[in-house]
Image 1 (tube, helix red, strand yellow):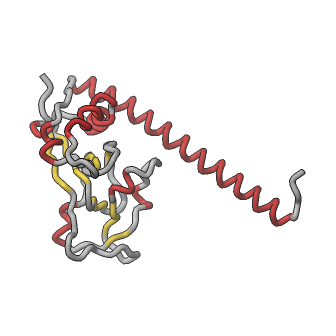
Image 2 (cartoon, helix red, strand yellow; image 1 turned 135 degrees about the vertical axis):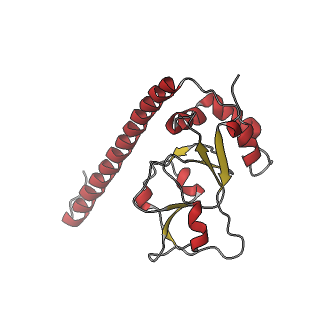
Image 3 (cartoon, helix red, strand yellow; image 1 turned 180 degrees about the vertical axis):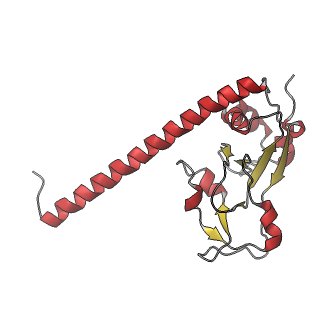
Length: 195
């Protein structure tokens, strides 16, 4: 039997500022992680997140190494693993943060959550008609397959390799686009015409 996530992990929702949202700016004390960063379709680079200034009482909500972040609203529910960053990272808005217990390898859980069969289970837990929502209560009830730890770690290593390959391919595409843009600008400057 697969236990519900709530028995093998802690789940909390990100802080939602309803009255006065903190302002982004270079004098911030945390990096701001929002749902838009998780659904951008490119590898997440923590150091590129915008700076945000939050009150000291909110600093306890910053991500800890091994936390998993998953959107709580929208059309996509891919999970992301936080492996640490040079600056504090503060999740805000429509996000759930999952903190696995020692029974779970965090990267394994990310792989499990992103598996098509689990994504199908998640889609059945969504509420709302126009804007879909993955509530904390629904996430806590999600059943998780928990193989022995050596198997979890083996799957986690394979998933990490896959993520590294995806990041390398994305970077190569960025380099190709930059190179083509550079050559195009040179052609424009030289006044050359295309036959």
